[in-house]
Length: 256
Image (tube, rainbow, N blue to C red):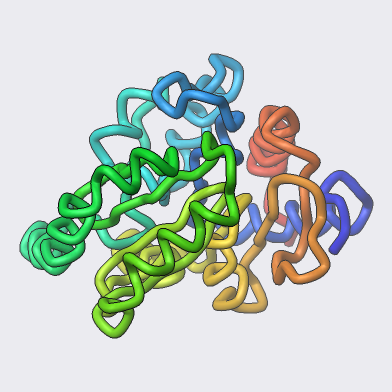
């Protein structure tokens, strides 16, 4: 995996922009820095301004683990699409989203019954509707916290899709769409020829894995040997420059 700001990356970005792709982005760790208090996360003015300019020319989507309503107020610009809850919350398909929310009710009952144990282990439950996140960043004994989480989730594993993140374990319905499904659906919806996707975490890897050869995929954060993204950025601090280069490529006349 190469840094996007390299000769190979510049060529790939220019080629991608010629296809006028769907531009899809994760939020936390990608457009916004990871912060100690998730409620404090925001996109910088510099990045939001560039995304607004980009949205005047191409379809722009936010595909995030947050709930759609939660992320909307943190953007500072209006994307064409927001898909929340790791792909499970598509605002254009509310009936499906409601069904996926209801599928987590048995887990909600389990977590409520074990609330004291979770609190003692410093595990925070974040119910986002179509997904539930069990955060253990504040736990004094993270191995014990993970063991508790595994114990709570074990009886329902057949009905759940469980996946890790940065100091968090996420659960969605077993048949819930993931981010790759979301990007493919958005491609059909906006009729774009290709896609650009940037993300930073394990739940973004399905998009990298599913990417067609003409998609441009970017991992944000230190390069990981196991990642299937084509390129990487060092962190969200490089996002404004990426958007500048994308906008510049869009302004170039088409080759004849």
